[in-house]
Image (cartoon, rainbow, N blue to C red; front, side):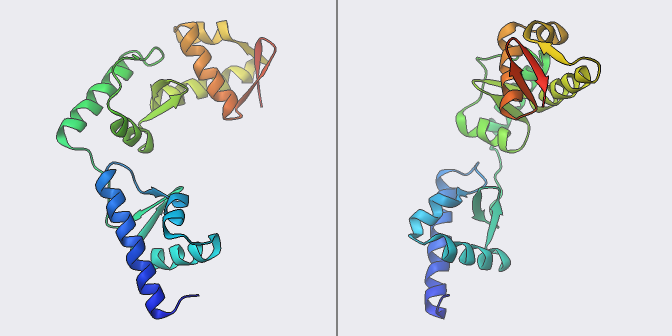
Amino acid sequence: LYTRAGLAAATDSVRDALTAYHATAPLRPGMPREELRGRLRLEPQPFAELMARLSRNGLVAERGSAAGLASHSPALTPPQEEAATAFLEALRETPFSPPTDRAPEGDVLAFLEGAGEVVRTGNLIFAAEAYDEFVDRIKAHFKKHETITLAQARDMFGTSRRYAQALLEHLDAKHITRRVDDVRVLR
């Protein structure tokens, strides 16, 4: 519940905070909602109402757990685009044994992750297509077998233990599989 002047002031505060955020983090879709709420010093309910109103009015776009100006669309610069393309090509060359030394700078990597181009599994990064193929093939394995071992997954994908383990642990964390002793079972 805002007065007209209060709503105008709150709108200006949101616009200013998001403009500043986009200037410092242009590749991110928006500021984490809780960070924005903290900067505005608002309780959860008034903040939710304000964000709903600003979203309806077309000023703010809510993107997952972030909020950004509706007019902001993250885009890579030409050098960043080159780095991203080179990295994605390197990932696709050896999809289940991706290089660990060619990751682009943090913001570019976060952009690729946010765009669904890559999947981070702990400290390893896989092309999204490779990750999806891994999930599909593991699920297909469970249609014929009750369990899978780390060695079986490693051999199935022609990769090393390190990469297979990272992928299987990620599936455990996503509640697709569950580790039972030395095997995985489908959840």
